Length: 318
Image (cartoon, rainbow, N blue to C red; front, side, top):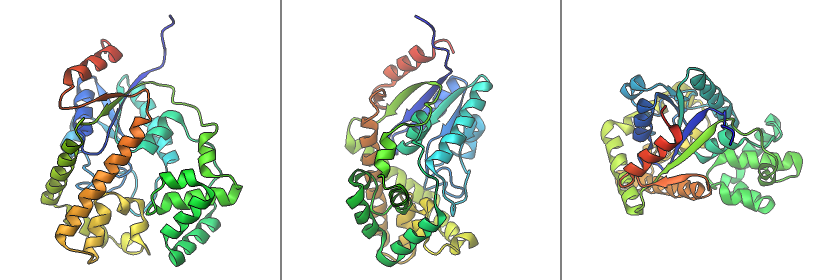
């Protein structure tokens, strides 16, 4: 049987609070790797405590890529991520080191590992028109419009996700073809790496829920609300007409903190809503991960030996 010449890479996937960061650090240190973050919140500068961004000490031990690559008032598409992550992987491999992909953003993993369909470019005038409609009618109403023309996309996109609702409506209005159909059809070139996909997920959902609550309380103790106050005080953020529409502010925890600092609800309500939103995120991540049929699943609390064996078989004497 011919030897597969493609370079090796690891993909450490899983729901939020499942222990991906700690495991990725351990693996990268053990196998001479560098970490490529696959997380849509960690790309933003200033989203540190609430996004559980690796600390300066952790980054000093292991090089990290695609952290802090955009300001919080900017957007960052899956296509941009795929391009920059591919470049980071190529640079890591050229140094003779192991690319370790780690994160929980399914769309980013899909864009990088499988490629994206070649869809029409953004149309600024149409985007402005859709944004004006949203301001007049609200994003849930535009989500309902999307459900009429593209039920598959609407089922995948949350009614409070302006960026993706706007893009889906834009593509349909430009081409007459639903974005879900574009996505089903021919994708770009697949990533030329041999990738082992490892999913870290507690078998007991209650364990994950406890980890989520405990981690959020730790974030509060570390000064999460002061971090959000600092973001709100940035002149560029204050210049944004609707900051809650920004992808950075929509990150779980940040949206709920922003709303509470706007005067919505009590401190207890804020904590409960943030934890509930994080649990919902974990549920969506697990649903997506179940579709990754070539991924191997491990409970990080009980399958350490199996994990070590899987790594040894894949990486050999590296």
